[in-house]
Length: 243
Image (cartoon, rainbow, N blue to C red; front, side, top):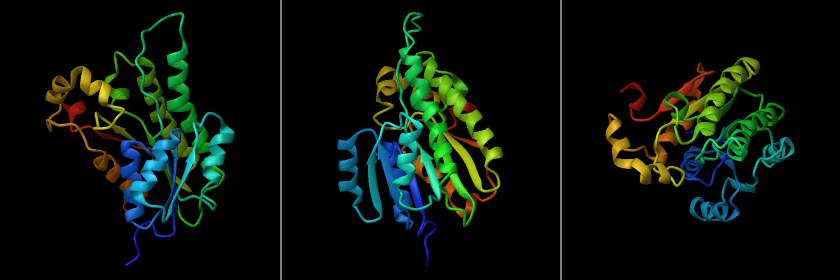
């Protein structure tokens, strides 16, 4: 039986992170050919050792310019079926009026590169069927993040970007976003260390999420089962935003 992604090329940015590895694995397990992009070359190498080299390519990039984003898309070697943009930066901000660096980095690494990746994808996607873009927001766009104001603002921007792109690229590309809560990854370690137990008790499911639980939603959004879903942001947070 043909798997859902057999013969399809998928680009995953932030692919060497916790959610990224599980997302790449999910696509590969269903026949996909994946290009994994990440800023960390050592992490890319470790991920490739874990996942294997069959139907998996890697490319190191900080996605700092439109040209770099285009290079990542072109690394697929053929028109791309899906772009999953997980790359991002999670920094604390002291609201220092004399230091805009955290703000600038947050917008560049969480929002601007998402726009640039989507633009690059829009010029090189597989047109045989509706292609897919999945961007990454965060539960922070709904709840706010007192210590990471620029991050929350950038992730709210992802929601607006998703809605606009879903209209602009329809009907050829379905564009959606995910908004994870606290997931057990290296990026979330500071939050868990700061107030992990108190935060966990706010979550109706009484636990943090697993990377594979995010990857399964991403896989769904890129699958034929999600053929009538576009412009949506799917919150994956164990129910905390509804508690």
